[in-house]
Image 1 (tube, rainbow over the protein chains, first blue to last red):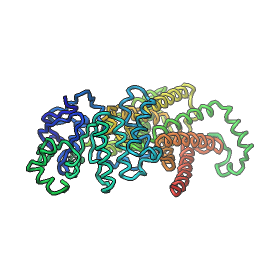
Image 2 (image 1 turned 60 degrees about the vertical axis):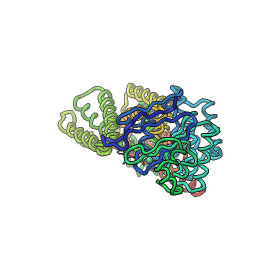
Image 3 (image 1 turned 90 degrees about the vertical axis):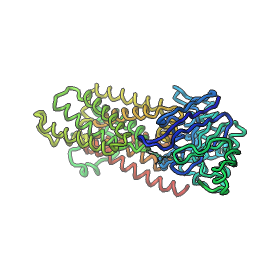
Image 4 (image 1 turned 90 degrees about the horizontal axis):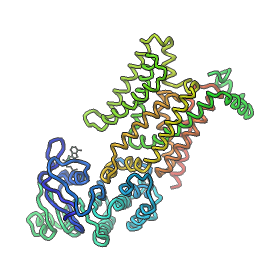
Length: 238
Length: 299
Ligand SMILES: Nc1ncnc2c1ncn2[C@@H]1O[C@H](COP(=O)(O)OP(=O)(O)O)[C@@H](O)[C@H]1O
Ligand SMILES: [Mg+2]
């Protein structure tokens, strides 16, 4: 049984359809890349998987022992956090909240998990620094560590490399690949970068023109007309 | 207040440390002065705790709106001769807090416009009722003391003090139980919701607590200055500190110290309590801005 299955979902705002009839599944260990142009509804899709926004029709079902609140989420960068006083440790630990239940404070195991995840992403020595004073790449690592605290199974990443320079982008992709391969975490990532998508992902979901243009494994995508056009441009951004 | 016999400036230079101590000891004989200090410290502490969240969530305008609601409700309560106005003012303010939060999330009426509507409306109604009601002979004086809290903190009864202390303790306990959830919801509401934290519920709790603090704070500084109590400690602490925990504790400390100092000064030199407290908060903010500047240089 897949960890996540979207059955014929249609997304939109106030009656206006953004994208219709999406159907795909994500199974344990998959690395799914969602590609499509700006405004095609990729972020909206993630929000309905996270139950932040109800789809207009269709269903998102989690399975394989995954509870909906156990999905780790790396949001598309927002402006809200610009002047927020928060240390890196505080931000990372806030990912542990879904394991707290009624308990008001984090227990030893959760604090250790937060430390481990910071270690894994190479930000352990930043623990006491202020989040907003970090570089863009460091901030993304912090948010990724927070997402890791919230899940052991599935990560949803919304444009994790947007605004990062090429070197830091490569590092970020390597970290995500490492999490997928060594830690066995399923990844669903939104990206504009088709070259990277076909390089790292096992599956591709391509949306555009308010519909699902392609869903399948990466090899098939490269064989398809669509894949030939986009990937053939040698890493053109969609 | 009966404190000074002369004006502020006449009294100020004449005070030596011994004089001050004697004078304070004299005033502490009065139970009302002790009540005022206890209540003031509790309210200062609570408002500083919640102020950080409000400022960070851009909710601070709600505190301002609610203070006008509380003013209107107080005026009505006085006009209809309620023995304990509290039981009208608190529920009305809590209900308005919930309404404001709802409309704030509704995209059709913008949150700030809704707040302005409710706060201006209740302010006007309150003033009208005060004028019409035969109860008040000195409308200007009444309005002034409700807005600036000139005396009421020194006229608290022991019941009011108990109520205030109990509510304050409840606010503090709730805040610390929900501390991590409030942090998560304030920092990133979407992430918190996605990982199973009921952000709407915590926003509601915050709104209700704010309403309680506003109503309590009216006694101390009056309804017009209550926002100062909520905003200044948070902004001062944020000048210097860079973690949520440090900001919370610093803001609580700043608030308690400033409020105490403000009340003592007001008692000693006979200035109105509310504005004096706010003046001390402003002074504190200036100091923290300077410290923040130098800390920033060193970083
Ligand atoms: N809160 C909203 N209210 C109304 N329309 C929205 C909202 N958020 C996004 N949209 C619209 O939905 C479409 C899809 O947006 P989004 O999912 O963010 O696209 P993507 O992430 O693929 O760039 C866009 O046309 C956008 O204008
Ligand atoms: Mg997007």
